[in-house]
Length: 321
Image (cartoon, rainbow, N blue to C red; front, side, top):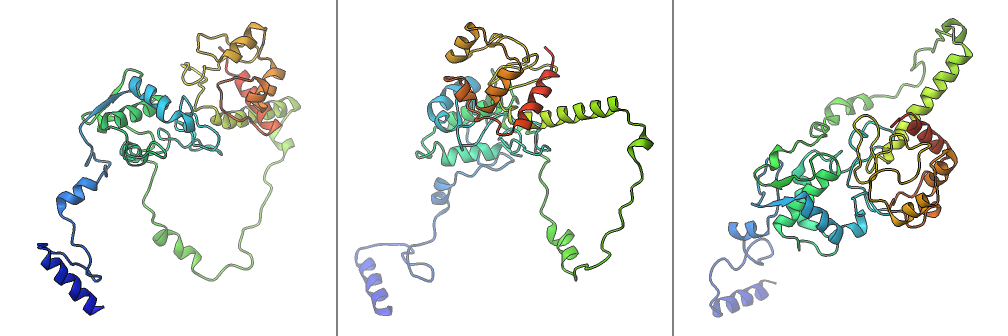
């Protein structure tokens, strides 16, 4: 090995190579120069370090997303198949089935910019121009209802955007706070205080009517939780407006395609045929949208549980127009 190394050094010197040709334990290459490292460094920090000059509008990002990203993530960033949903999800992180998106979950906008710039679009990474990345990030912010449709994202206002989950992450201190609790000998008997019944239904004076009302409230609460899967595209409640999908206030018992919204051809045809969203029709649609209404633009695969379907319909019925 030593002889081979000596021969290589001599060959390099004979060729007129200057500078530190051999480096490190394997005597190969040389340390990278700072400008060489900078040419490969695309890293963008939460404080804006590394963010290049540029800007991009929501409108441009909408068009670009349809051309470069919609095949996997849907026209409205609602996700296709197993590809992740990128829009909506605000306020769902405390739910049993949270919708984790750029808007609802990611604490730093720089993470989205950096990730798109480095690795997207899929199979053709690092082909996007800087302004195109700004446009796509602006569109994702709009899809999560964090900015208006005329918003323009730039290096100048980048840090002004406040992410809803910016304070949702904490330093992992389990080694100090939790590990000691599980490092001692395990408890083998009398580890839990006895459970005592302190109240009974008769003591609380629960009438049959009150019990029915309690069940209805439980059903509405369950429906609201399940509806978290729909929040990426649909809004309900006070101030609800059309976004990726139409607002659903007053939908139960209403005519199909009733709103001023860009519905699919299939939905408009069903409305012309007299479709009314009563309990039966809603239940069938929520179970399997594409089988129920071929041509629908809704990419959601459906609710697999009849109990979830009943709960969502009950929740939607409570959201009046």
